[in-house]
Amino acid sequence: MRSTGWTDVVAILVLQGPASAPHRLGIETACALWRIARAAGQVLSFRASASASAFAASLRQGVDARDGFVLVDPADVAATADPAELRDALEALRVPYVEVHDRSAGVLDLSLRPDAMPLATIVINGDLASGYRIALGIALRRLVPAARLGRG
Image (cartoon, rainbow, N blue to C red; front, side, top):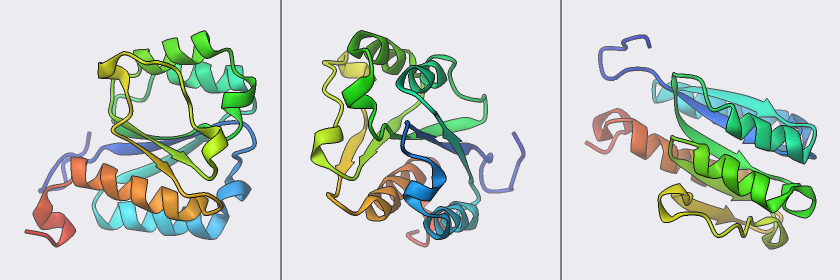
């Protein structure tokens, strides 16, 4: 990790499921989110998965040592994934995460252990960009001292 003088820089990983390619979010929105994270001294990175099994594998392989938070956008995973595989992968994730959805039908219902539950599940039907902004705000409030966010 690099020292910024305020805090160590950690990455916020956006893990996107199938059908959740960058064009789903929109390049303008992705760039705006990146700028918000950067202004708070954090790094935002995106990892897209082409299938439900690749999404679960990305969760299982873990996150980079610098990743301190994950925004999980499962997209269409709930309809195609093996629930046990996905549950095991989320329970193995060792950093806090927020689920982001653009429709209620995509919410993951996996009966996770209490310590493996997301900090929040954001569902704004038809407005994925707003869901991402809220999720990023949660991540930044967890990772960045209040003074850096203009609240201190």
